[in-house]
Image (cartoon, rainbow over all chains, first blue to last red; front, top):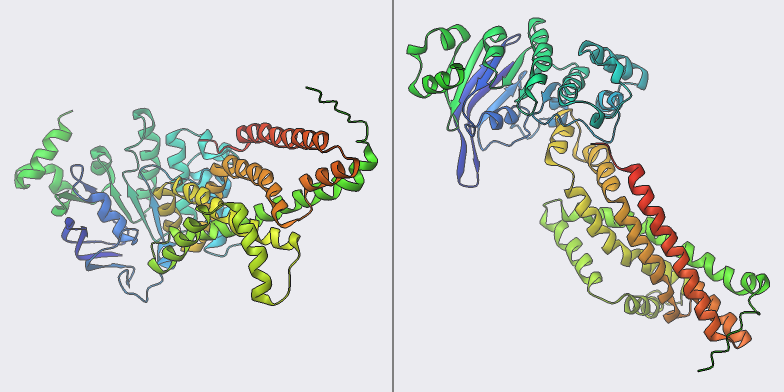
Length: 244
Length: 223
């Protein structure tokens, strides 16, 4: 579904990604973890070309993102993305947030978009808030709406960029519950997160990044079950994050 | 000092035959220059933020030039230059409308530029992520928020614009101030009419300022 081939990226002279290669298969849930500044958020943003890459290539569903002939908006419309800071459109109601891109990008009619959007809203359990503005919802609720917004577009894959990092602790659970449900339904997911509980429960593979490089890329059971086989940097990260 | 003021001559007849016409033109000029100025200003702001040199440079030149020249000079120049360029004179009123639109666009563009920059990069990402093109992202996500964030400033600029319309006296256009001036001359009461004119400008502008403040609370985006 997603092939990341030898991707490198620089901000000026500073290299943020170095020769990253991995792939995400259909139906797979892959968790990307690593310390702050390791480039994991940058990597996930390159998958739908929100961040340009200078070397290598990324193939999403057979389409190269660096091919100048690729229609990027069209490709992005098929890739759902959830952001750390939700990024709901604050000037629109929840329903409008769910329907806007369906109507303007996919060309669905109002009724069709509304039906689809509200179905997704119901799925994340927020139907009662359909006429509110994002600012009237809690962080956890906003993030669930953001997930519903992405799902309304019928994506072939979902990207999550630290979806729970900006949330109060008591709201993390409600967002993770939605994500677990999604994973169990067989959605292809790439998830940048520090939630190791989520990784253990539903992920198939774990990618560990440090200093812009993919240091570990292995099955979940290997990653958590066999610490001795891990690189020193991953071991250190795991010991810090798992001891609490 | 003997002021000896007499406002007795100012009745509805005088107002409707001298002042009303000027008032209507002042309002007309303000509204057209506001709508045209915001439209052109938004375009200039988008050009300046495009990151493309061939768009940034002319927009920056336009804005910086007009913001560095006194309005009254622009009004005069335009009025005097256009007949030379098109070969026939243009009415003072039409000339004023075009000048104000062009001039105010420079100020509105700086307001819109700040407004666009007040919308976070994450919002643009979110627009792109659901498959929007750059124009869609601007039109549907960024500009509506920029416009709402900046509405009080845009309206305050419009109030200043309304006051500045009095500068069309330089080319003899018949505006609100001119209306009072003509009435004053007719009745040989210039001091009284200028006083009343000041009060009228004050009431309109101060009233609008109050309105803007109330509006600000009402339209703010819930965050």
